[in-house]
Image (cartoon, rainbow, N blue to C red; front, side):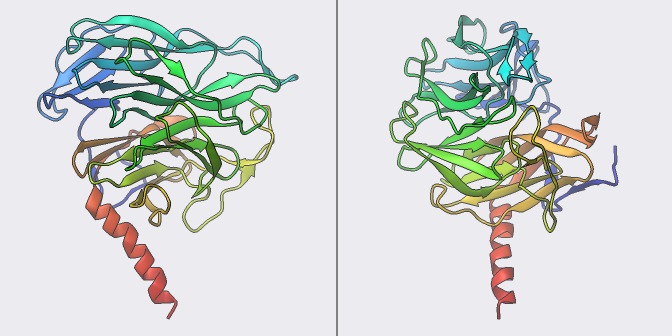
Length: 364
């Protein structure tokens, strides 16, 4: 399938795996993936998959970033998911309040490699939206960055949930409240990664032209340093990942297309300030100093007039990145057109740094 409006960076390769993730590299080297049918396994890097083993009801593979999984040091597989079984969304636009909204965050785990699943439980009640990071820290704690609807006025706040017993029980952090007013406003859809010193970094979607960031120095129990980041972004989530090399990598939609300006829209019932909804380009950037600075963004794919957003990012092997657009459409929300790419870390680091060299050369 071709589309004259689709451009992909020539250094990127097509990924032939026909799943959108999330993927998990198991301790025994196999890949695992989950959808509503269950968990399945691959011994050939995603070319073929085993028959699924049912996990639980409520998983919705049509909604990107609505579930993720990790494996603990003792081999337990833990799935964290938004439970769509009793999904409801009714918003009071006049008073800007969630009227009847339900999308709970649940977890379930398997102590025997996916054969059986136990402890299916609610982690956060109410209404929660997509989340872009579920990690096991260097100390073995399970941590996910999530967002949650609150009232007066209705808006999203960000926080983390964490488990110190391999998913048997969960606790919550403090809430990160940036204000806002509307069902698409506030501190939304965070992504997290562990830094080299064990601190956690959270990047938060906002309507404020950039990601806000938060730092936790106690493994996600509390977020005390909360401030605007240096990373411009549209009102779309990004995906942050710590690589085996020690670098951080971020894939996201920038505030504006490269070389242009994207018109803002709003305010509206979903948000109280005008915001950029630019989702036509996915860009990638790297940090070699724990997020203090980032390499110049490189556009990896463009869908003019459509969208490439809600990215999934997976390091299949050291230095080999799989990038998948959760929402990939030719026009707006019409005509699905999947984007699944394989990138080499060092190649794109070099490509990004070459942009610095080009800028410096132009200054002479």
